[in-house]
Image 1 (tube, rainbow, N blue to C red):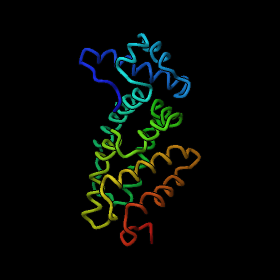
Image 2 (image 1 turned 120 degrees about the vertical axis):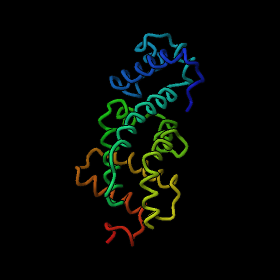
Image 3 (image 1 turned 90 degrees about the horizontal axis):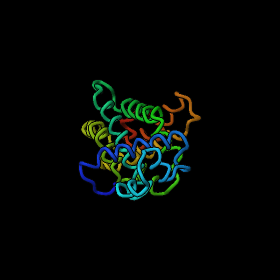
Image 4 (image 1 turned 180 degrees about the vertical axis):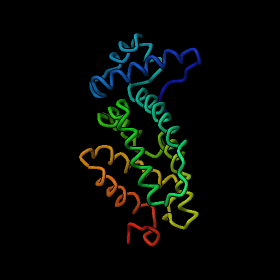
Length: 202
């Protein structure tokens, strides 16, 4: 993550900046929001913002990570017992996309991304989002691997496919619920699960 090193004394200011950024992204969108806009919404000077964050992308990353971690807690606290692997992939994918779409700040960031750096943060393999996604998906992938169902993929590779599919699913807001299920079946389940073990491939 690109935000600058800070002390515990800065936490309240950082939170004000993130709250100000969230307000701006919801109201005017990512592209139209400047560092000055964020500073004004936070009630601090622009230099105060720059002392905590190198640029707007760093604010986006920090804000996104905080909100996504909250979603992670809600997902990992739910039982996933007695669900077959294909349905688990579909259900987890649809649940994750639904949760991110309900969060107006996350939705603004995904829908209004205006830089390659932000896009790489959203779908790339080296960001903190990759590690968060691995926390959700590693148990699912290990279950598939133990059952001999997972294709010859590392968990890291598989999660990158998952995140790319989720990103596409998020922007395809024209799809109805049944179409979303079909989208995940034909893109993600087919990518992760061996044909001989994939009930949707038969």
